Length: 203
Ligand SMILES: N[C@@H](CCC(=O)N[C@@H](CS)C(=O)NCC(=O)O)C(=O)O
Image 1 (tube, rainbow, N blue to C red):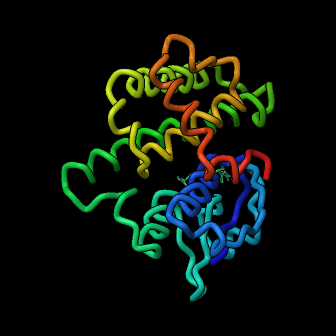
Image 2 (cartoon, helix red, strand yellow):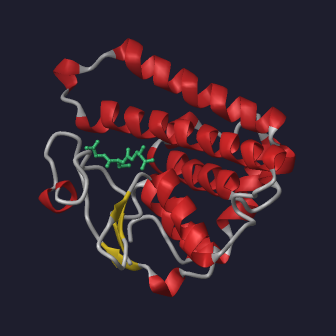
């Protein structure tokens, strides 16, 4: 199977991290593609009308997107029941943590586009402030309420761990670690996992 995108995208990276975590690292071919919000990438649009990364092309030629569906697909192919448990209570806890990580990722990528891609004359400070507030609120929630789920490797902790790396890399001025020692400790441990070391930002 082929996975399109690059590791600058946290959504792409979390799919590659998942592939390594479920033992499919060498089965997923990396098709490096980059994106900008205003110019569609024809290779991606041929696979998905949404035109965002990541997109996975299965061995049967089917397109699978977006990141949360690709993560589940990889677990399914590997027969892995640990990253997205079947058990109801655990399952929806993990999926909610994953949604929190993805929401944090949407806000962080959105803020990056606002500050680095949008022409200065079109800046909308209230929107940037709202995105910053959303990032802070998500980090506060992760610090205070999710320690036990983050202690396990699951689809939620993967999404959160990867997105926090992105926030630190692209939005260092936010200093997300400040005042959040438990989240910082989680991230330090997660960032040293083999799956993270094999998928560095920029590859
Ligand atoms: N909901 C999507 C979000 C993916 C996403 O936002 N990808 C960004 C890169 S980080 C993208 O492709 N942006 C290009 C665009 O907006 O056209 C997912 O989880 O996969």
